[in-house]
Image 1 (cartoon, rainbow, N blue to C red):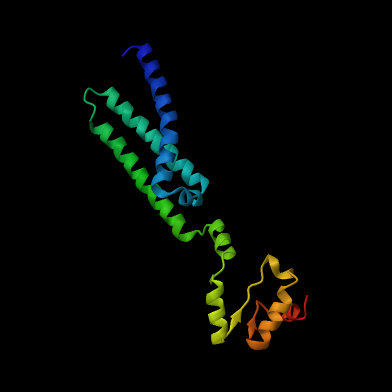
Image 2 (cartoon, rainbow, N blue to C red):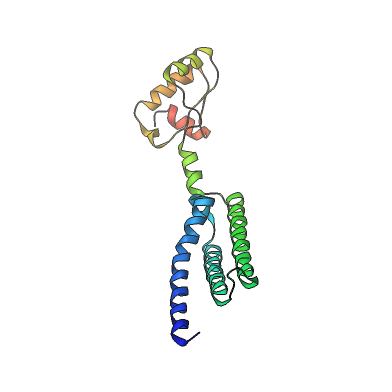
Length: 172
């Protein structure tokens, strides 16, 4: 090949690499899920993503440089791409299993453990039993203390701590 052809090939490989980078990360997030990919540390994403894009370009270069497109060098680089993709899947799985998503934990804490309709709550209260009250941002609401006091007359009210229970029943 002449010098001009090499320069065009280098330009084409650079463009292919720049196209392959977002393709790798898009496919990775679509296959593994964006939430799971967000758990993976940045250096794993950088290394595996750039590695897959670089190996894809090397596979293209190996196909162009030989007479037959599917040759031993091309298959070697395609194998590297596949191995890096499997590695990306394993890393993503590891981080999904062993690292908890803090946003999910916060959402789980904000959701009530049990939500009953008004009719279901009345049936539970008629049956008697233990009443569990979770204090949230509305703990200072003016109607909460009298309601808890009324409940406490008929049923034991369980709060997060004894001090919280006494504060609430005392009206403050």
